[in-house]
Length: 161
Image (tube, rainbow, N blue to C red; front, side, top):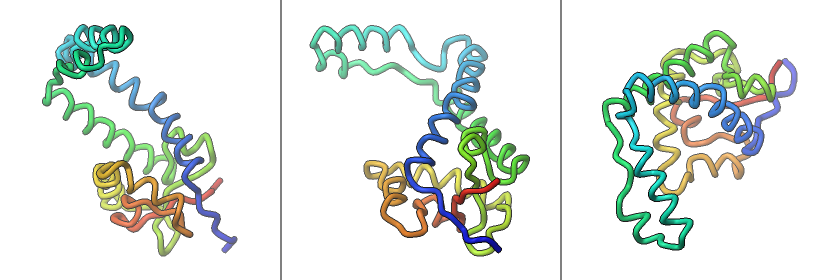
């Protein structure tokens, strides 16, 4: 087996930004229209931007846009399902990961991840976000470049085909 090269923080960050544009944003647009605009209150968001731009941050923070928990949950589950589908179809890669030639594999065998690992890893993103994204930041400081979500799912992100 060839020497494994772990994917570090910045290449994974670039893949994540690409996935936001290629996966999350299109799903968000579809769900926003399915919700007939009730998922997110854009009018309040625009008003807050106006307050913030005019120097009134207190007023901007006082009234946050309302979210529909039902539509937010549908969005989050949709992103999870689509990500898992891509991981299975493209052997551990989403469009963003594929674009930068990295993939998710089992940490011990370096084989494709299982469905359980995929779901655990996705849910692990929530834990990685807690306490100022420390679960993601730790990628930059570990020799094996694993984040908290990788540790929970027993996965690692490596450079691949």
